[in-house]
Every structure is written in structure tokens, then in C-alpha cells.
Image (cartoon, rainbow, N blue to C red; front, side):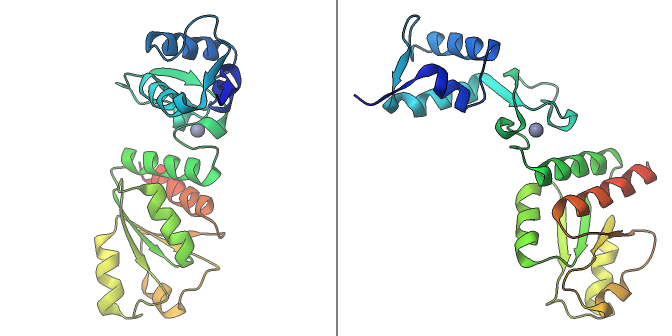
Length: 201
Ligand SMILES: [Zn+2]
């Protein structure tokens, strides 16, 4: 039968050393393996992942990834690549920091001007419905009728510089809500918004 070493399976999920022992105790409790067994059938891997996911919350050392108060699963400190919150991604961590800063500042609606279609999709995915997010894109008609209502709606408007966006559109985005992201990339955008929130608290 196809099987794998239990210790390797656990390490590949971020459980090493003392946290591997805690994971193992959980697997004993769930009857997925028993003391003394070194290997486990590959057919059981799915059930193991389910059991680990239900019992433990894996987080990296970054404060933004710490489990929220009220989290019932047991916290396990892991390397960033295994972190449930950021999965080792700088973009994801930056977006989490931005979301936290916006929450603290009571801001929930973000207008983003510019960015590539791919980066916009990625930003939406990382925000995952936790933020009102609208865009001024290369397809937005650059006039007051279309852009000004978007700016009125937003708590913060961020211009993603050095991306494809008509100058006419960005010229309409003025005022205290508007912030510029100085560089490309989701982390740069998220940091610019976070810094603005920190100033307004
Ligand atoms: Zn993390």
C-alpha cells in the first residue's frame, strides 16, 4: 500500500518539533493513527489535512497574521509559507496590514485608479469581500460624470502610478481622499493606503 512517513507529512504542513507532537496527539485523538506508527496510508492524507485544519490555526510570526481573539482552534507558530493568513506572500501580508489599518481608521471603501487587469483581479482576491473596492481603469470614460461619483463614494482613492491609466482620469482625482502609490505592485499600493490611514486616525 502507498504510504508516507508521518513526520514528513506533518513537516510538509508546517508542523515540526514540538508542534509536530501536538499535531500527532490530535491525530491519535481522531483515530487517524496510533502511537508507534511511523507511516500513514496516502489515502488518509485528506482526512489528516481536514483534522489538522479543524484543530489548529497555523500562523507566522508577523503580528498581522496572529489569530483573532475568539479563535477556538489551537494556535501553532509556523514558517510564513505555512501561515494560513499570508501563505508567505508579501502581497497578502501587505493587504492584511492595509485592511487592519482601514478598519482602525473606520474606512471601508477604496477606489483604485490604474493597475493592470491581472493586478486588479489579484487585489480583489486578496481583499476577498472584506472591503468595498471599485476601480478607475483604462476603460473608464475619463470625465466628471463617471469619475467624480466614484470619488464621492470612496473613503480613500489611490492612484496606482506608473500603470496604464489616462492622465484625464487621474486629473479628476484630487482632494484630501487621494493618495498616490509611488510604485507598481500590490504591496506598494497597500502600504500607501495603510500609511494614509495611520495619518488620519
Ligand atoms: Zn503570515
